[in-house]
Amino acid sequence: SQKIEQNSEALNIQEGKTATLTCNYTNYSPAYLQWYRQDPGRGPVFLLLIRENEKEKRKERLKVTFDTTLKQSLFHITASQPADSATYLCALADNQAGTALIFGKGTTLSVSS
Amino acid sequence: DAGVIQSPRHEVTEMGQEVTLRCKPISGHDYLFWYRQTMMRGLELLIYFNNNVPIDDSGMPEDRFSAKMPNASFSTLKIQPSEPRDSAVYFCASSLWGTGYTFGSGTRLTVV
Image (cartoon, rainbow over all chains, first blue to last red):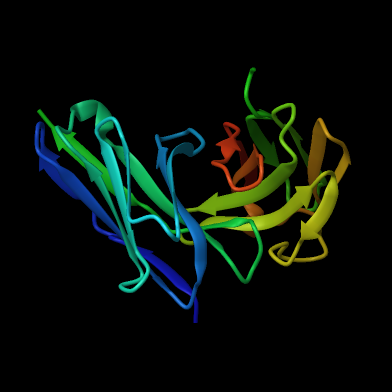
């Protein structure tokens, strides 16, 4: 069956450290993969998009990697801050299924000062 | 741009009543999506439109759910009759092809 799996457990880290979140997928052939941030009571906010032919993408303190062999994307936040505390969602657009994004359930990150 | 606008923000209704959720996408975006979010199932795609035409409604749970997009600036999601298991947060999002989605603030629906 098709699955997108993110760490179900919350990730707790200290301010200033690098947070690394994992997204694994099964039985999809993604054209691209995206990461979103969601705060309580709000809609998801788009952060980064990485295409199947790209290995890495950066935006300020954020970095995303995409390994189609391992069927995995890693999302890194360097020099993390308490304001980075939120739920982070991984989503992919399957080549075979069309253009709509399919979302993982997200990982909740908590950064303590 | 004010972003994707959804209304109402909260809706409490009795089982069996009709519920209509509304969405105004970002001007110029040619894709519009309806998602539902629950703790158990996460974000689930219900239906999406391209240039006002429904492309994939396979995520619509039952015939009780229907969605329309009469023009490029407006879409509705209707549930008739509503049931308690429909309680969730419903999100509308819009995008250009192959880009990030812009989500609205969502409608929190409670069916009692």
